[in-house]
Length: 377
Ligand SMILES: *Cc1c(COP(=O)(O)O)cnc(C)c1O
Image 1 (cartoon, rainbow, N blue to C red):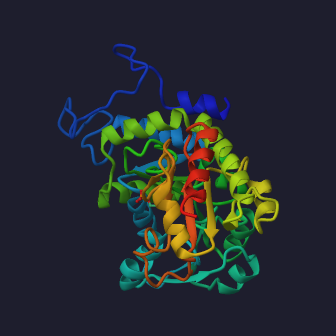
Image 2: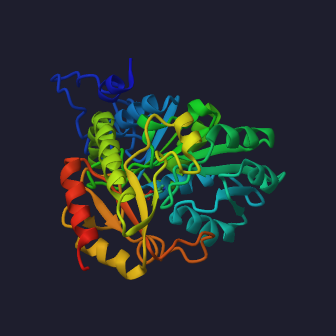
């Protein structure tokens, strides 16, 4: 079955008792057991829940992985994954990974003896030189936030494997519709389900997908032992989001293309960052590893004041953090999303504006952004 079909059918057979076509929200914390010591499928809901399991089955199928585990947030998924490592192990990160990932390593896990370094992941040579004997994980995020750099997943996975490390890819920005890291050689995919997978800005969630059974078993143990599990309602919403992922991503990409056209020709915009632009440094790699270029766009204005003005003058693009929902969002990474991660290796220009292009009609979005760019002469 193809992607769009699996999104609607994988793990989602009609419910046997009444034939409900939607997986029910099994809002229960425990399960009655027929005999002492012999529970049915589940005993307690931290360990398992049918709504969660349906979402996990569907997402595993979309990523082309054998197993998926769902978590209460993207960072809960990341923290649980990193707990498979031990003091003395080393993690190699991109120099512009998601701020929360950097904070988790630098301000939480470093204190428990997990070492890490940051490196420019767009340069495979630099990745190879920064890898150590103790490196157990090379953590890739592509496209990156907010400069939308593109990392060659196959090249980094090869470097990781040569040194006995795993290649983990944060696939939040691209989603499995546009990019499937496991097929490119990565070992693990992590997601903030909060973003495109949920897709409607109405839940917080995370997930890990892998085909490494041994790792999946360890993660299933940790998922229950550490306990950062999602509730059934959020799993239901996440599953509903997955069903429309393909059509939404097509619309996000279409909108982004229209916005990029506007920005490229606009006299007040000094630079546009989008992996689908032939002049973008990651364009060739993006063409190779992605189906299309996604709904995230960032651009630079002539001054910080102009950037602030644009971000405050759109009407359809809401001024907000987060991304990946059906509604368009605008934000300034330097004072907003990146302000909380001091010490992160990357300088983000104060003139930078980031857009999460929603699925409204592209002409309405172009009109809204054009009006904001042209205002305040
Ligand atoms: C939002 C985000 C995360 C963290 O996910 P939460 O669901 O907010 O915990 C991780 N990686 C990327 C790329 C993100 O955008």
